Image (cartoon, rainbow, N blue to C red; front, side, top):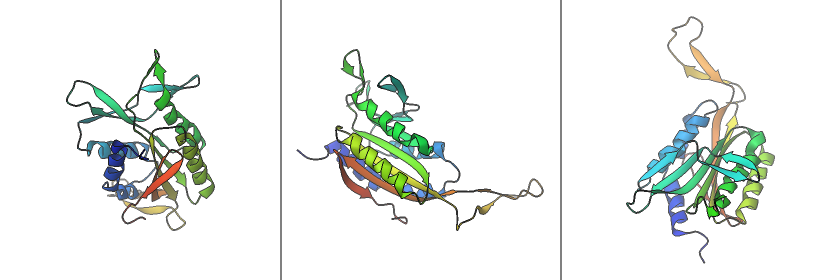
Length: 214
């Protein structure tokens, strides 16, 4: 049996073609901007796709889970859509493990005895962290590896590093001086690195190279 389904292979190939380098042109926490990037990637597929934001919910134990995005595709010119993917975009380092568990809950969530998302193929966990922080990055890797062992999903992890620009705040964002004395603004940390990798069945499949970054 192949490690990836035909659909999952197509998802990985489409990600190799996407311009993730644009992430480095984002400033601030960028939760909504990153969400918009994943929406843009999905709408670039050669399918009739739609997005749900926020996602419909699932349950993990007795806890309600609501992810950021659901990726839906119209089923063979019929009037209904299949849920193909789910995504979480997270900036809060204390919530990383919970968000991975939340994503995992979508695969096995049932309502009235039926799988609520039977066509789910992939999960995206996109997170930002202050770098360098190999300990936390490895914790995320291990958590995704763990949940993927009993999963049929393709797990896509996008790790985005935040760092001080040359060790100091970046004052390079200038604007017309409409208010005297305030002709620039800055963020203490900027998005400075992107690492994307995929995991299935407890194994790392491949890294996705981002031109100009890795």
